[in-house]
Length: 260
Image (cartoon, rainbow, N blue to C red; front, side):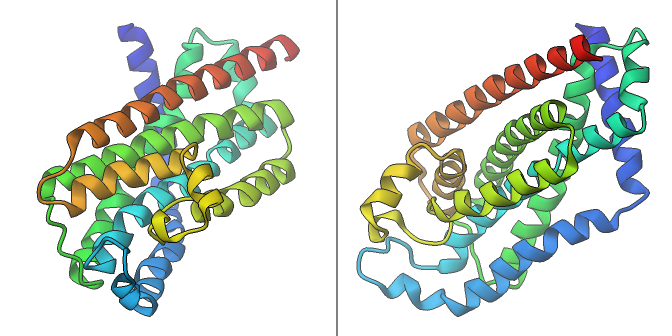
């Protein structure tokens, strides 16, 4: 196991060094969520006055959703790194080394988790400094939001890597990611309280992992006395999803190995 951890950190460090050579990537991935948080939040801040909305401050309501939505969007592109290694022959060269096969998949996910932490801290900071949020849940609530974002991001990153290993085409990965991420966002309570949404959206949201992360983060961050049963149950679902998605990625990688 220590060898697996050592190799996983080596692979994560490799991806982090590549990211540091183009730090603008983190900024680029933050442009859209900042627009959602600042412009969308300002435009619809009075929506909390609707009867039954259930929140007093729209910035408090919106920020946890933007954090986990950013993790979803960013992780969706994780497979592009695997594709670049495949096209350059780097992935096949790793296969003839004694490096752990699990680490080849876990490394990019660790890098994704670190990027998610940075992005989440920036968005939460903007929510406090610019958007007018107060976050009654304080630091523990912020930590829950970040953990939920990490679990969701790593799960979606694993699925993206699995997709890349199966299709091996950038166009297919791009089309799949773009066609799924935005609908998942709107089929959740990211922007609107679900008790005011159409009933069919509320029903679909029950099976939406983005909604699980939103519920956990929002309950912990916006309530001075969170229902930890709700928080932990949603985090548990996200952890199970991560395990399942990593298993799918592992099977996809083994299929790639057999075909290589």
